[in-house]
Length: 162
Image 1 (spheres, rainbow, N blue to C red):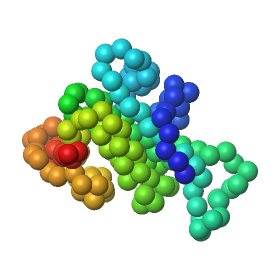
Image 2: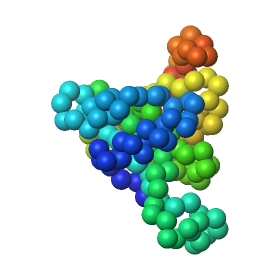
Image 3: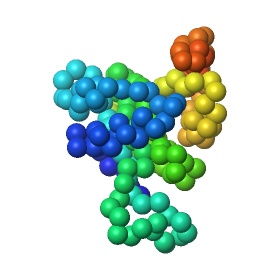
């Protein structure tokens, strides 16, 4: 498994993965295309691709090409970055993929001399909140009734890069 910058050719796979994840931010195809345009807000789109391991050193199907296991989208709002979306395939969760995506984002953010990365997440998304806390994000606030369908609070997190 490796992390790489996404390309426009990855959009169908990104959208397919995102649509299968109820907690993901659901974007239109146009929004994903805009993420790759050099105009306006700067974004980084990263993908994790590879084959899932069934045991150390054994691939699930060595003849099958590597697939998309997860992705991350963040935007640069100097001097900060906002994590807009991170999704890991349900079959690939709890294997360190989310952590690797976050580490790649934090590394890229440091290269821009940014001060922090921030995000908001559904209060009920315990798995994501645990991942963020393990990655060094600190809870900084709460937005009441921020999400709809269902109505839910957003928990705010920030990771200082200094």
